[in-house]
Image 1 (cartoon, rainbow, N blue to C red):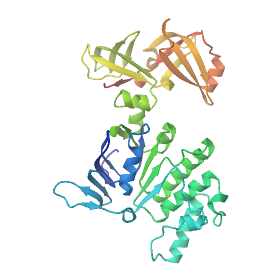
Image 2: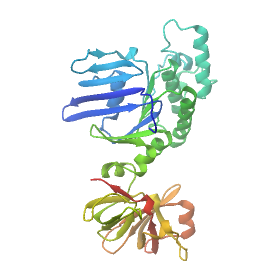
Image 3: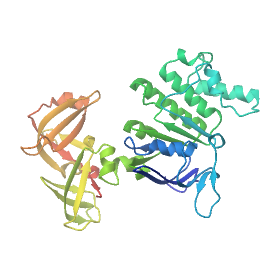
Image 4: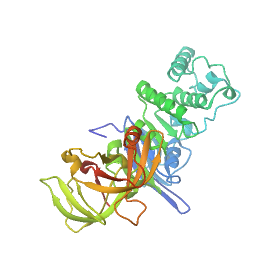
Length: 374
């Protein structure tokens, strides 16, 4: 996070389950933190530890100056039960009570002795914010999947939680409903300013909703940073693969020119110019680029400097149309299925009429090439 921030949550925990060992330390402020990672990475376990549903083997969890958990040498042992932690939790399955209507489900966790007027005001506020007005008296069985998930989100927010935990809440819904619920979540963020931790596998969702993104694998944090840092400057090859770098090569450094802001690298089949990095000649490196940053060069185009530095003639080996884009696979020489993957907007693909066997020119934009530490 840029600048100094007030820590809302400080977590430093470890836990072992059989061969799986989780060890994570992170701090977050008034933000949406997205945790990305493959299945079994430990993402949901972190949420369950914060909520008090899973007990760490050791460490500490502190939220808004309240110690949720502490098991450290020389410190008083603390393990607050879930109901005293004041967290909101929304899962993939809404978990609504079938015998209660929408209003009853939302207000189920109301604090004891809550003023009836405040109770009604909060309920009406959430019904309006989450587009549930007119559904107050319906039972869960009378609601769509998206409506049920909005009720679950309203219930998690009703008690004004210290922090909102979201464990893939939209994963079971279709794309159209999921897109609308992301918009709802942005509205919640603007209205309540509640810090959130969102677990997801969806890269688009992570980029849209996250102020910062943490990438996990095998119980460890591989990188945590802004969405721009994680998606366009991944810390290593594993992070790069996970966030969509489909083009990764290995090579050796030829020269590093600080004044010219250039790092020249020789790959197996081509040389490339990258932004400067302080690496000595001869060092072996991995480097890569996102498919959408591979540029198609139209015949006769006058090339500007950012484009002309890494221009190659390639052969199209396969074309895979998608809804909004087209994935094009390219090779530099015979003998391989492909060397480069390019992602074109649909209108460009339709205009250029690219087909397998075509020979075209492409540019690997220097500013988009990134060295990947091994």
